[in-house]
Length: 265
Length: 353
Image (cartoon, rainbow over all chains, first blue to last red; front, side, top):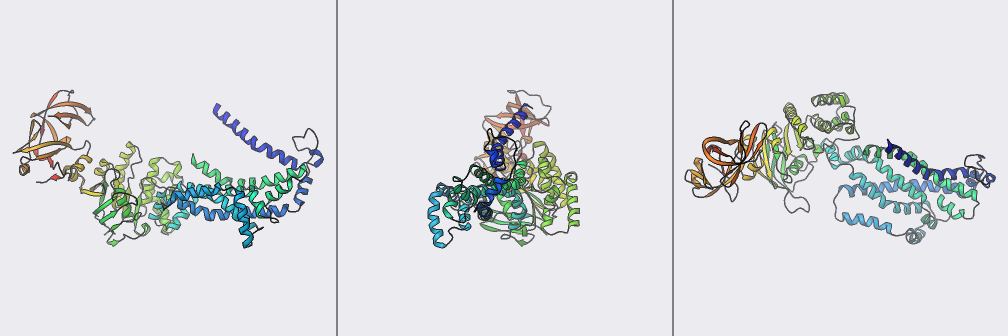
């Protein structure tokens, strides 16, 4: 009983730690500009207004940036899963020459800082005409997300015992069918986690996106490059716009995530 | 006519120093129950997996029902299998698990359901058909795995240590049930276990493997009674066969200072050292027998297991349960020459009459 109370308190504390700043940012974003300058700042919604938010969204580049971010994020998720999940499966199931060095090499790609990676990439993209497109950012983000995606998904596939796949083939399934009917349903929660991770990584990545684009900026790149010159209210509006979509995406994926944790017990 | 014929199968795993299965030939007649038994790492599971089509042999052939299947994938071999880890699908209900093979073979739903129900009845799973495997006990999960295998009505049933994950009491209960079910189904069965008691009790015939090689195959009692090598005698039976070093001298065996009557055929090894093998229950207490000093007394309930010193060699004796003896007492033993088995101490092969 005592333990449960402690556990709940701990949960509350963690939730507050994450939730309160988001609440305050949201509050500021939806408060009129005059109310924002009052002291002390009211902690409840006293003077609700969409003025700041509307102003922010009307700023040139914000809507475009939002759409770019969304496109890049989703395309990165798709590309990462298409490339990363099969690689993870191979790492999990097959002993092939260079298995261990392959895994090490994957991690090594993350040893290069994005700045070091972005400048030569920008040169390459300039030459082949991909510079300043969402494709360029998608490719960069996929490259950034892949190593982790491969390693996580291989751990997910390892979690599905090989004997189950073998059982499926003994009972008449082709290898492809065994994969689809036995492995995929069980791996789905883990794959969802990879998707969440990839999307959030892409959504939050600023440096590479800033270097690889001029006009086709993603939202964080757009907001963060203009933020320093913006009034306080805009910063809150921008902050909220940056946080919200990632939260929505996680909420959508929550069902699958809870699945994996629910069955682990 | 669904026999299994395994001919000179060889398998070496990549990176292994020796063969996992080394030139094994074996025949399982239609409807027969053969148990592959041996210590862990003897290649019995690999052999089974090659019959199932989950492992590809380096050389040799597998025929099932007269058809060569060596290169065929598992799904085309017409076999059914129970896995050691059960391998039930956790994301499917018990009913979906049992019916999986039928679904894969596109059996129409009404027929599938009635067959699933029949298999579930045989294994007392009717009550839990809607549950998921995580909501079942280990024993029930095992039943699901068996039901999933027998519902196929496959002519060949393969089982890889299906009882090894159950606790001792459950294992004993399920063992006899499994034997009954397999007999009802009538499938040609190949069964792998490391448990010699399981092998003895289940199989029509028992095949003993060691280091990838088939050491002996025969009816369980015949193998128990006349082991082909010292290894088989020591592996099969509990307690294992007693082995005493002795020398043949005329019509008797000299075990240290003690002399035992020798079987007739021993005369051809006159003067040579031999290994005397005798089962604990073949040693009887007899006032006119040779003296031995009791070292340990272990009541097992059904019998009194004595460890005695015969000369300077240890011997296990299964005495009547009502016998009252204390350690350090002297008992008199008789070993009937007909129950004595002789082995060559160099090759450890049985010396035959």
